[in-house]
Image 1: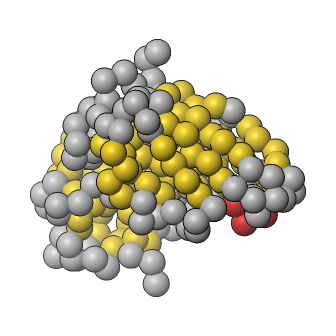
Image 2 (image 1 turned 120 degrees about the horizontal axis):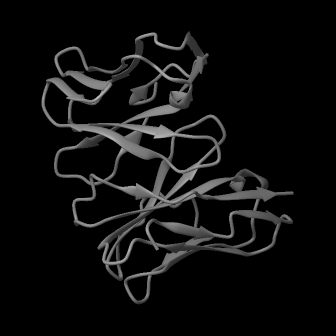
Length: 114
Length: 111
């Protein structure tokens, strides 16, 4: 595809449920980022992959959050035992170079935890 | 106090107006400065990327960086209703790849 795609676009989960969010980056892009965007706020960094290697996960808010990119393309962000404070838009971005200053964002997955 | 401060607005202007959007920051290590536009229910889209102090122009958009004052601006000339969106500033420290975003300013351009 032409851009970064994410699925599902919307997800409603009951508190305590596990969720998996998928990101398809632009083909050939080395770097992949996950962000969390709360309502009325800017995106907050969660984690960064260079190819299949997760080089930085310092932004993951708890050990309930886990991300993977096993073949260096598609990435999945998993949230276990969801809590209401996890409700946010989860954005994925990819970039061609390892520096990543020009990032292309997907439309996001809007997660609502009830 | 957050590292990057940005007034959330909303900022409402008539079509054709010159718009000025601003961010201040406290971290002297920021070296790269960006402006993103985010439409409702969409991901951010990079508009401008600058490194040094000074001005950078691209069509109707001008980005300005003043490192001595820790202040960046985005100017939009001849604003259009299609410019109505949230504008996010973002900054990256030298040697890093993780941007720090402002909270965004909501802009409304009415016909």
